[in-house]
Length: 215
Image 1: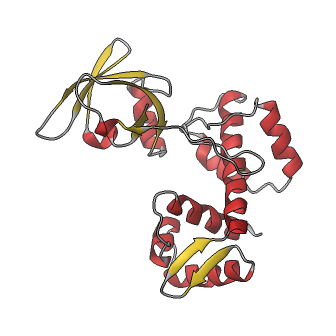
Image 2 (image 1 turned 90 degrees about the vertical axis):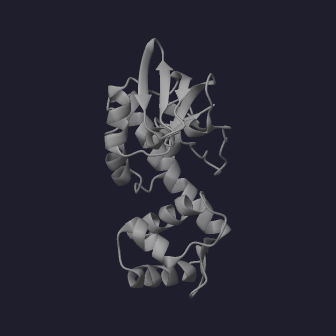
């Protein structure tokens, strides 16, 4: 597959992870910041390779072959993120763009050795699951902090928004994976939260709370 084909598969995979319905060409175009006509052309190519099920005007879904291929791309991306953070001391807000380049390396042997070298991690630095060599994923039960109520306590296990700006904000507030978060107050007016992280009390917006996964 070309880099472009791999990027499309990965995008469709991520979109299907938040919706069971077939994905529209417009949704893909918006996510990839391209024209719907370009998406249509690519979907035809992927369909010919038996990677997607595509019917014009009815959306697209991944075939079993396409789903496995997408998982392998995601696997490479998240393993490289782990390597960059754990072995090269990159911060978690720096690694996404670099991993976007490294995920296109074709060597399966390299990726499997990288997996073993890292100790076969099941989650990347942002708390997202890493598929194993067979595409299996260990899912962790979690919910958004915004769904919590006063006096509830949980552990931060992931982020919904992986943008650099959001991750830098979390660093500034000393919120990281593994942080214990206690809800001190939930404002009825704007649904903002007063929380305790370790010994520190801070106020966060509902938008922030809606991007933190807790268990």
